Length: 389
Image 1 (tube, rainbow, N blue to C red):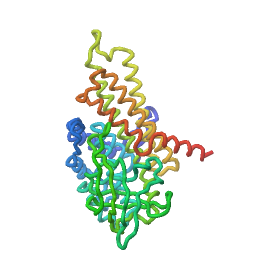
Image 2: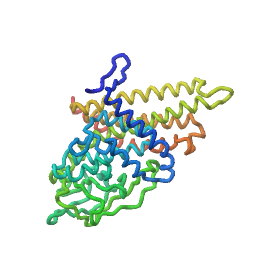
Image 3: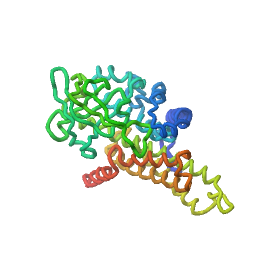
Image 4: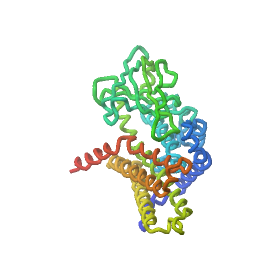
Protein backbone atom coordinates (compact mmCIF):
# COMPACT_ATOMS: atom_id res chain seq x y z
CA UNK A 1 0.00 0.00 0.00
CA UNK A 2 1.42 3.39 -1.02
CA UNK A 3 1.33 6.55 1.03
CA UNK A 4 -1.59 8.81 0.17
CA UNK A 5 -1.88 12.57 -0.03
CA UNK A 6 -4.58 14.20 2.06
CA UNK A 7 -6.51 16.56 -0.24
CA UNK A 8 -7.24 19.00 2.56
CA UNK A 9 -3.78 19.42 4.05
CA UNK A 10 -1.49 18.31 1.24
CA UNK A 11 0.30 16.11 3.80
CA UNK A 12 1.38 12.61 2.94
CA UNK A 13 -0.53 10.13 5.04
CA UNK A 14 1.86 7.28 5.71
CA UNK A 15 0.49 3.79 6.04
CA UNK A 16 0.95 1.78 9.22
CA UNK A 17 4.05 -0.02 8.01
CA UNK A 18 5.70 3.23 6.92
CA UNK A 19 4.97 4.85 10.27
CA UNK A 20 6.52 1.84 12.01
CA UNK A 21 9.65 2.11 9.82
CA UNK A 22 9.90 5.83 10.54
CA UNK A 23 9.46 5.37 14.28
CA UNK A 24 12.07 2.60 14.39
CA UNK A 25 14.64 4.80 12.65
CA UNK A 26 13.77 7.79 14.84
CA UNK A 27 14.16 5.72 18.02
CA UNK A 28 17.55 4.32 16.96
CA UNK A 29 18.77 7.77 15.92
CA UNK A 30 17.68 9.36 19.19
CA UNK A 31 19.21 6.61 21.32
CA UNK A 32 22.46 5.70 19.53
CA UNK A 33 23.34 8.57 17.18
CA UNK A 34 22.20 11.94 18.54
CA UNK A 35 23.99 11.67 21.92
CA UNK A 36 27.30 10.96 20.16
CA UNK A 37 27.14 13.09 17.01
CA UNK A 38 29.04 16.13 18.31
CA UNK A 39 31.77 13.96 19.85
CA UNK A 40 32.19 12.00 16.61
CA UNK A 41 32.42 15.26 14.68
CA UNK A 42 34.94 16.79 17.08
CA UNK A 43 37.15 13.69 17.15
CA UNK A 44 36.66 12.91 13.44
CA UNK A 45 35.71 9.43 14.55
CA UNK A 46 34.17 6.85 12.21
CA UNK A 47 31.71 4.94 14.46
CA UNK A 48 31.85 1.57 12.70
CA UNK A 49 30.44 -0.16 15.77
CA UNK A 50 27.26 1.97 15.80
CA UNK A 51 26.93 1.77 12.01
CA UNK A 52 26.99 -2.03 12.28
CA UNK A 53 24.16 -1.86 14.83
CA UNK A 54 21.86 -0.79 11.98
CA UNK A 55 22.24 -4.21 10.33
CA UNK A 56 19.86 -6.11 12.64
CA UNK A 57 17.33 -3.32 12.09
CA UNK A 58 17.29 -4.06 8.35
CA UNK A 59 19.15 -0.89 7.34
CA UNK A 60 22.08 -2.63 5.67
CA UNK A 61 20.04 -3.57 2.60
CA UNK A 62 17.01 -1.30 2.63
CA UNK A 63 16.01 -1.99 -0.97
CA UNK A 64 17.92 -5.25 -1.45
CA UNK A 65 15.81 -8.37 -2.03
CA UNK A 66 15.02 -10.45 1.03
CA UNK A 67 16.56 -13.75 -0.13
CA UNK A 68 19.99 -12.36 0.84
CA UNK A 69 18.85 -10.60 4.01
CA UNK A 70 17.60 -7.39 2.47
CA UNK A 71 14.53 -5.49 3.62
CA UNK A 72 13.04 -5.15 0.09
CA UNK A 73 11.59 -1.73 0.92
CA UNK A 74 10.68 1.08 -1.46
CA UNK A 75 12.26 4.45 -2.10
CA UNK A 76 9.74 6.36 0.01
CA UNK A 77 10.49 3.97 2.88
CA UNK A 78 14.18 4.71 2.42
CA UNK A 79 13.57 8.47 2.41
CA UNK A 80 11.77 8.16 5.75
CA UNK A 81 14.72 6.24 7.20
CA UNK A 82 17.41 8.64 6.00
CA UNK A 83 15.40 11.67 7.10
CA UNK A 84 15.03 10.19 10.59
CA UNK A 85 18.72 9.28 10.90
CA UNK A 86 19.80 12.70 9.61
CA UNK A 87 17.79 14.47 12.30
CA UNK A 88 20.42 13.03 14.65
CA UNK A 89 23.42 13.32 12.32
CA UNK A 90 23.38 13.96 8.54
CA UNK A 91 26.89 12.54 8.15
CA UNK A 92 25.88 9.24 9.78
CA UNK A 93 22.75 9.02 7.64
CA UNK A 94 24.58 9.77 4.43
CA UNK A 95 27.08 6.95 5.02
CA UNK A 96 24.21 4.50 5.49
CA UNK A 97 22.88 5.80 2.17
CA UNK A 98 26.21 5.24 0.40
CA UNK A 99 26.46 1.69 1.77
CA UNK A 100 22.94 0.97 0.54
CA UNK A 101 23.70 2.37 -2.91
CA UNK A 102 26.64 0.00 -3.28
CA UNK A 103 24.65 -2.98 -1.97
CA UNK A 104 21.73 -2.25 -4.29
CA UNK A 105 24.00 -2.21 -7.34
CA UNK A 106 25.21 -5.71 -6.50
CA UNK A 107 21.63 -6.81 -5.90
CA UNK A 108 20.30 -5.36 -9.17
CA UNK A 109 23.14 -6.20 -11.51
CA UNK A 110 25.08 -9.05 -9.91
CA UNK A 111 24.68 -12.71 -10.77
CA UNK A 112 22.97 -14.96 -8.28
CA UNK A 113 26.38 -16.29 -7.25
CA UNK A 114 27.66 -12.73 -6.65
CA UNK A 115 24.54 -11.79 -4.72
CA UNK A 116 24.89 -14.82 -2.45
CA UNK A 117 28.63 -14.20 -2.01
CA UNK A 118 28.53 -10.51 -1.13
CA UNK A 119 25.10 -9.42 0.02
CA UNK A 120 24.42 -11.41 3.21
CA UNK A 121 27.45 -9.79 4.85
CA UNK A 122 26.48 -6.36 3.49
CA UNK A 123 22.85 -6.51 4.56
CA UNK A 124 23.90 -7.62 8.05
CA UNK A 125 26.47 -4.79 8.13
CA UNK A 126 29.23 -7.29 8.89
CA UNK A 127 30.83 -5.69 5.83
CA UNK A 128 30.56 -1.99 5.01
CA UNK A 129 30.62 -0.78 1.41
CA UNK A 130 31.71 2.33 -0.46
CA UNK A 131 30.97 3.55 -3.97
CA UNK A 132 33.84 4.65 -6.24
CA UNK A 133 32.98 6.75 -9.29
CA UNK A 134 34.52 10.23 -8.95
CA UNK A 135 38.17 10.71 -9.94
CA UNK A 136 40.66 13.58 -9.46
CA UNK A 137 40.04 14.68 -13.05
CA UNK A 138 36.41 13.67 -13.55
CA UNK A 139 33.56 14.67 -11.27
CA UNK A 140 30.40 15.76 -13.04
CA UNK A 141 31.79 14.32 -16.30
CA UNK A 142 31.66 10.74 -15.06
CA UNK A 143 32.01 9.28 -18.56
CA UNK A 144 35.54 10.72 -18.74
CA UNK A 145 36.92 8.54 -15.94
CA UNK A 146 40.45 7.19 -16.48
CA UNK A 147 40.85 4.29 -14.02
CA UNK A 148 41.52 1.30 -16.23
CA UNK A 149 40.92 -2.43 -15.81
CA UNK A 150 42.75 -4.87 -18.10
CA UNK A 151 41.91 -8.57 -18.32
CA UNK A 152 44.85 -10.79 -17.37
CA UNK A 153 44.10 -14.49 -17.18
CA UNK A 154 41.47 -15.06 -14.53
CA UNK A 155 41.83 -11.54 -13.13
CA UNK A 156 41.40 -7.91 -14.01
CA UNK A 157 44.27 -5.55 -13.17
CA UNK A 158 43.16 -2.06 -12.15
CA UNK A 159 45.24 1.12 -12.27
CA UNK A 160 44.11 4.62 -11.36
CA UNK A 161 42.60 6.53 -8.47
CA UNK A 162 39.22 7.54 -7.12
CA UNK A 163 38.64 10.81 -5.26
CA UNK A 164 36.33 11.90 -2.39
CA UNK A 165 35.37 8.34 -1.43
CA UNK A 166 33.34 8.18 1.77
CA UNK A 167 34.36 5.34 4.05
CA UNK A 168 37.59 4.73 2.13
CA UNK A 169 39.97 2.76 4.31
CA UNK A 170 37.17 1.78 6.70
CA UNK A 171 34.82 -0.03 4.31
CA UNK A 172 35.29 -3.69 3.45
CA UNK A 173 34.05 -3.63 -0.17
CA UNK A 174 34.31 -1.03 -2.94
CA UNK A 175 31.98 -0.90 -5.95
CA UNK A 176 34.31 0.58 -8.55
CA UNK A 177 33.74 2.01 -12.02
CA UNK A 178 36.72 1.40 -14.30
CA UNK A 179 37.42 1.59 -18.00
CA UNK A 180 37.72 -1.70 -19.88
CA UNK A 181 37.13 -0.29 -23.36
CA UNK A 182 37.38 2.87 -25.42
CA UNK A 183 36.77 6.41 -24.20
CA UNK A 184 33.20 7.36 -23.40
CA UNK A 185 30.37 5.76 -21.43
CA UNK A 186 30.32 2.47 -23.37
CA UNK A 187 33.83 1.59 -22.24
CA UNK A 188 33.09 1.58 -18.50
CA UNK A 189 32.61 -1.55 -16.35
CA UNK A 190 31.82 -2.19 -12.68
CA UNK A 191 33.88 -4.26 -10.24
CA UNK A 192 33.46 -5.34 -6.63
CA UNK A 193 36.86 -4.85 -5.01
CA UNK A 194 37.56 -6.22 -1.50
CA UNK A 195 39.64 -4.15 0.89
CA UNK A 196 42.40 -6.77 0.96
CA UNK A 197 42.84 -6.88 -2.83
CA UNK A 198 46.57 -6.78 -3.67
CA UNK A 199 47.51 -3.35 -5.06
CA UNK A 200 44.67 -1.48 -3.33
CA UNK A 201 45.64 1.40 -1.04
CA UNK A 202 44.18 4.59 0.39
CA UNK A 203 45.24 8.22 0.59
CA UNK A 204 45.32 10.39 3.68
CA UNK A 205 42.02 11.27 5.35
CA UNK A 206 40.94 14.57 3.83
CA UNK A 207 40.48 17.69 5.98
CA UNK A 208 36.93 18.71 5.14
CA UNK A 209 34.48 21.47 5.96
CA UNK A 210 31.89 18.99 7.24
CA UNK A 211 31.07 15.29 7.39
CA UNK A 212 33.89 14.91 9.91
CA UNK A 213 32.42 11.62 11.14
CA UNK A 214 33.15 10.01 7.78
CA UNK A 215 36.59 9.17 6.50
CA UNK A 216 37.12 10.60 3.01
CA UNK A 217 40.17 9.39 1.12
CA UNK A 218 41.49 8.59 -2.30
CA UNK A 219 41.18 4.95 -3.33
CA UNK A 220 44.33 4.03 -5.24
CA UNK A 221 44.78 1.10 -7.63
CA UNK A 222 48.35 0.09 -8.48
CA UNK A 223 48.29 -3.14 -10.48
CA UNK A 224 45.36 -4.09 -8.25
CA UNK A 225 44.24 -7.64 -8.98
CA UNK A 226 40.53 -8.43 -8.85
CA UNK A 227 39.08 -11.83 -9.81
CA UNK A 228 37.17 -11.79 -13.09
CA UNK A 229 34.22 -13.15 -11.13
CA UNK A 230 33.94 -9.75 -9.43
CA UNK A 231 32.86 -8.03 -12.66
CA UNK A 232 29.20 -6.98 -12.36
CA UNK A 233 26.95 -7.69 -15.37
CA UNK A 234 29.26 -7.46 -18.39
CA UNK A 235 32.06 -5.34 -19.77
CA UNK A 236 30.70 -2.00 -20.90
CA UNK A 237 27.68 -2.06 -18.59
CA UNK A 238 29.25 0.11 -15.90
CA UNK A 239 28.01 3.53 -16.93
CA UNK A 240 24.43 2.28 -17.01
CA UNK A 241 24.91 0.73 -13.57
CA UNK A 242 26.30 4.01 -12.23
CA UNK A 243 23.45 6.05 -13.66
CA UNK A 244 20.82 3.59 -12.41
CA UNK A 245 21.90 4.24 -8.84
CA UNK A 246 21.86 8.01 -9.05
CA UNK A 247 18.12 8.74 -8.95
CA UNK A 248 17.76 6.91 -5.65
CA UNK A 249 21.00 8.39 -4.33
CA UNK A 250 19.74 11.88 -5.09
CA UNK A 251 16.56 11.26 -3.13
CA UNK A 252 18.58 9.83 -0.25
CA UNK A 253 20.90 12.83 0.02
CA UNK A 254 17.87 15.12 -0.19
CA UNK A 255 16.35 13.18 2.71
CA UNK A 256 19.55 13.72 4.68
CA UNK A 257 19.20 17.46 4.04
CA UNK A 258 15.57 17.34 5.10
CA UNK A 259 16.32 15.62 8.39
CA UNK A 260 19.19 17.98 9.14
CA UNK A 261 17.05 21.01 8.34
CA UNK A 262 14.28 19.76 10.63
CA UNK A 263 16.83 19.42 13.41
CA UNK A 264 18.06 22.97 12.78
CA UNK A 265 14.52 24.36 12.90
CA UNK A 266 13.77 22.41 16.09
CA UNK A 267 16.88 23.88 17.71
CA UNK A 268 15.94 27.38 16.56
CA UNK A 269 12.42 27.06 17.97
CA UNK A 270 13.77 25.89 21.33
CA UNK A 271 16.44 28.59 21.52
CA UNK A 272 14.19 31.49 20.54
CA UNK A 273 11.59 30.39 23.11
CA UNK A 274 14.19 30.65 25.88
CA UNK A 275 16.49 33.49 24.88
CA UNK A 276 15.48 36.94 26.10
CA UNK A 277 16.37 40.39 24.77
CA UNK A 278 14.99 43.80 25.64
CA UNK A 279 12.78 42.23 28.30
CA UNK A 280 11.03 39.66 26.06
CA UNK A 281 11.65 36.23 24.65
CA UNK A 282 13.05 36.78 21.19
CA UNK A 283 10.36 34.63 19.57
CA UNK A 284 7.95 37.46 20.41
CA UNK A 285 9.62 39.78 17.91
CA UNK A 286 7.73 39.79 14.64
CA UNK A 287 10.84 39.77 12.46
CA UNK A 288 11.94 36.49 14.04
CA UNK A 289 8.42 35.06 13.84
CA UNK A 290 8.37 35.78 10.12
CA UNK A 291 11.75 34.05 9.71
CA UNK A 292 10.50 30.98 11.58
CA UNK A 293 7.29 30.95 9.55
CA UNK A 294 9.25 30.99 6.29
CA UNK A 295 11.56 28.22 7.49
CA UNK A 296 8.59 25.99 8.38
CA UNK A 297 6.83 26.71 5.08
CA UNK A 298 9.92 25.93 3.02
CA UNK A 299 10.66 22.81 5.03
CA UNK A 300 7.16 21.39 4.54
CA UNK A 301 7.23 22.23 0.83
CA UNK A 302 10.54 20.40 0.52
CA UNK A 303 9.17 17.39 2.42
CA UNK A 304 6.09 17.04 0.22
CA UNK A 305 8.20 17.48 -2.93
CA UNK A 306 10.68 14.82 -1.82
CA UNK A 307 7.99 12.31 -0.83
CA UNK A 308 6.25 12.85 -4.18
CA UNK A 309 9.51 12.27 -6.07
CA UNK A 310 10.20 9.09 -4.07
CA UNK A 311 6.68 7.84 -4.82
CA UNK A 312 7.28 8.40 -8.53
CA UNK A 313 10.49 6.38 -8.39
CA UNK A 314 8.66 3.58 -6.57
CA UNK A 315 6.01 3.56 -9.31
CA UNK A 316 8.68 3.76 -12.05
CA UNK A 317 6.93 6.82 -13.46
CA UNK A 318 8.37 8.00 -16.81
CA UNK A 319 9.36 11.35 -15.30
CA UNK A 320 10.87 9.91 -12.11
CA UNK A 321 14.39 10.91 -13.16
CA UNK A 322 13.40 14.54 -13.66
CA UNK A 323 11.57 14.59 -10.33
CA UNK A 324 14.56 13.05 -8.57
CA UNK A 325 16.79 15.79 -9.98
CA UNK A 326 14.29 18.50 -9.05
CA UNK A 327 13.88 17.14 -5.53
CA UNK A 328 17.63 16.88 -5.02
CA UNK A 329 18.20 20.46 -6.19
CA UNK A 330 15.28 21.95 -4.27
CA UNK A 331 15.55 20.06 -0.98
CA UNK A 332 19.32 20.37 -0.59
CA UNK A 333 19.20 24.10 -1.31
CA UNK A 334 16.32 24.62 1.11
CA UNK A 335 17.95 22.40 3.73
CA UNK A 336 21.16 24.42 3.73
CA UNK A 337 19.27 27.72 3.82
CA UNK A 338 17.20 26.61 6.83
CA UNK A 339 20.29 25.48 8.74
CA UNK A 340 22.02 28.77 7.93
CA UNK A 341 18.95 30.75 9.06
CA UNK A 342 18.86 28.73 12.28
CA UNK A 343 22.48 29.65 12.95
CA UNK A 344 21.63 33.33 12.44
CA UNK A 345 18.73 33.08 14.90
CA UNK A 346 21.13 31.70 17.50
CA UNK A 347 23.40 34.72 17.13
CA UNK A 348 26.90 34.12 18.46
CA UNK A 349 25.86 30.89 20.15
CA UNK A 350 25.08 29.39 16.76
CA UNK A 351 28.77 29.68 15.92
CA UNK A 352 29.74 27.48 18.88
CA UNK A 353 30.20 23.75 18.37
CA UNK A 354 28.29 22.71 21.49
CA UNK A 355 24.98 24.05 20.14
CA UNK A 356 25.13 21.74 17.12
CA UNK A 357 23.98 24.35 14.60
CA UNK A 358 27.32 25.11 12.97
CA UNK A 359 27.83 21.37 12.45
CA UNK A 360 24.52 21.15 10.57
CA UNK A 361 25.53 24.07 8.35
CA UNK A 362 28.86 22.41 7.58
CA UNK A 363 27.36 18.96 7.00
CA UNK A 364 24.47 20.11 4.78
CA UNK A 365 26.62 22.29 2.53
CA UNK A 366 28.17 19.33 0.72
CA UNK A 367 24.74 17.93 -0.18
CA UNK A 368 24.48 20.64 -2.85
CA UNK A 369 27.54 19.04 -4.51
CA UNK A 370 27.06 15.28 -3.95
CA UNK A 371 25.21 12.91 -6.29
CA UNK A 372 25.62 15.45 -9.07
CA UNK A 373 26.01 19.15 -8.31
CA UNK A 374 22.85 21.23 -8.22
CA UNK A 375 24.01 22.89 -11.43
CA UNK A 376 24.02 19.45 -13.09
CA UNK A 377 20.53 18.88 -11.67
CA UNK A 378 19.40 21.98 -13.57
CA UNK A 379 20.92 20.58 -16.75
CA UNK A 380 19.01 17.30 -16.28
CA UNK A 381 15.74 19.11 -15.59
CA UNK A 382 16.15 21.44 -18.56
CA UNK A 383 16.96 18.57 -20.92
CA UNK A 384 13.85 16.72 -19.74
CA UNK A 385 11.73 19.79 -20.42
CA UNK A 386 13.24 20.55 -23.83
CA UNK A 387 13.13 16.92 -24.90
CA UNK A 388 9.42 16.82 -24.09
CA UNK A 389 8.56 19.64 -26.51
